[in-house]
Length: 291
Image (cartoon, rainbow, N blue to C red; front, side):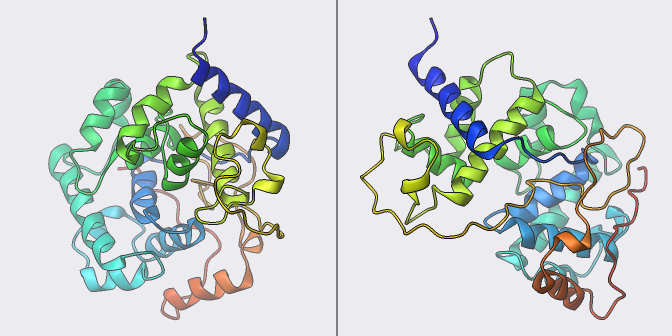
């Protein structure tokens, strides 16, 4: 007999899929690339984190060059993210620790360890918590079974009664992953992650959720307990971890065409150009160099 909570999660997932449709597709890049993006994404809007990654890739075509870069330069390049001073330090420390442990900047060996051992190994790197580790496993070409639980996902899981309201974000990773049906493959888990992210973006916001148009309001035990916000037009949700202009390499799984410069707002493109310090703007990142 299926437990009540996993059964309700499946109903929630089906309702979200009916409302939002299929998620976009993206490339599965090098896991080090995803590690950098995940570290930049902490408490930061996806657009700002993606722009920061593009800028870093233009300035540092090989991540080894970033290891000994001036921290003040790195901080300026990622200045649109939250806490850029801390992230610049953490980013360099994590890559240096990886270099020291492996002799080179690569994480493909994690595929041989299994999920639990791979997450444990990643968490030995400075600044890497369960969300970052899970993102590296799920969204890179490693394609291991993991579920990144963001702040929004954690909030929604508590409101929907999937986990205790006292459960911390870090402790929520294991229970939420265990609720997923065992026959769900990586594509199915990615879809679920995107659907929950879309729910948090469009409806289940932090302080004033838009409950009136929420596709899972009938399944939500928190409905009516939080003062809802007025409905308004919803902007497009960016991809969680897109490849962002990386040309397909051997060993990459390919999806739909990746994001182009025309997909980004004029204001975002202007900010990126400003961050490049008068460098010629580029809509395509350099190809990842094999390490």
